[in-house]
Length: 399
Image (cartoon, rainbow, N blue to C red; front, side, top):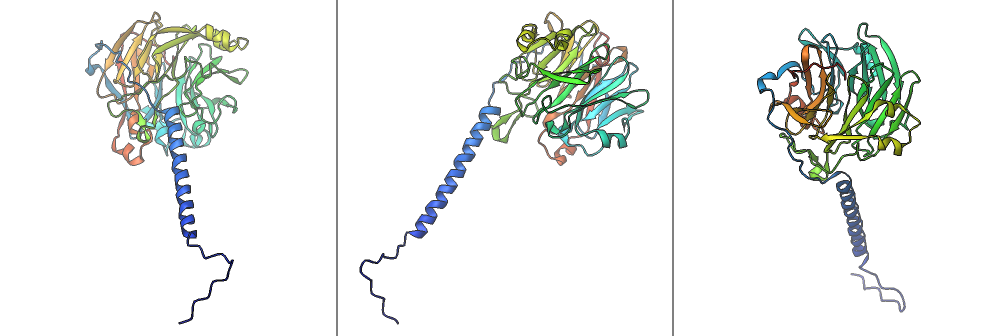
């Protein structure tokens, strides 16, 4: 056994502290990562979380549950719908369900068929959701382009032929990343399109006004209190709309949009908001109006439910879906509210469209069964339905 080496005077002694320093450094790194994660979670919670319950504003429905009948069904969640003046029924598959096949369909003889064709859809569609039919029988679609990360696009098809009649790609200043162009209405002459940008991840909702002839679009009311969500939690019977352990909640801005049959008023409402608004279409189209002046011309109509889709009838009332209570309500131009139909069968009352013979069509998109859910979960909760009922008042298709 070798003799120990004698210590050299003045030489540094071997230090056993190096492993301790390495361990200390690792603990500091872990601590910093945890702190960053906690800060990030706090930031998400402050930006997207929290909220209070919203009072139930539904009343005794005017129609029994038996008045609600199935008009169409789908193995995938339904998004928006539109019914023509002759009763042709079209609907999208909701893009949040990540559909892999046809994304726009027509219900023909008891089955859904791609419209216009699967080949044309593959070329033109990315994430179409909102659809409406104008008075010249053009079917308009709005495609948010994967939340503005792809190609947000407005398309119109001639119903009689299926030919593409109009196309416009939105520039980034109108549909930036995080936007969600998702519902639309066309004015009575077909000259302008009014679009709702719910923008729930970007937190920058607003309206988009599109001039058909000039092929120009501009944003208005971006972030205004009328289009911005209030601090309410959506309590759907399937689940409260909170995610990631309560860090985030679905707080959607302006979602539903409608136009009265005269073409004078555009109605709109943010989903997580207590008030319905309307503004004259002429004021929205007037590009010379500054934002402050336009805001002065908004009219608060009345208190509403937490809603999704809207549709106007021939008397100027607006039908409103209630996403918490499986209901459809009707608001008069004076703000009077009444409940038309309410059913436990409706999982998420989404889009509305007035058809011929007094029928009102309702898309049940079952959002709690598709948003941030697996494809297996979505399939397990199929089928998904379009319902219809007669409100007692005729409507205007596409309004």
